[in-house]
Length: 48
Image (tube, rainbow, N blue to C red):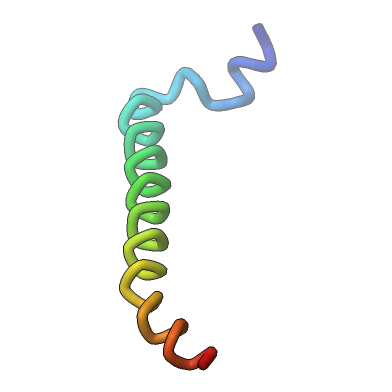
């Protein structure tokens, strides 16, 4: 039980912090994927 107390799991906003972390991760993955798709035509023409 001491580990749970020291890990901050009893913080009143733990749920919102976890949700924000997951949303940030998903947005980062989506933006990286979108950026690669957006840059793909330019990379292909530069390799020729």
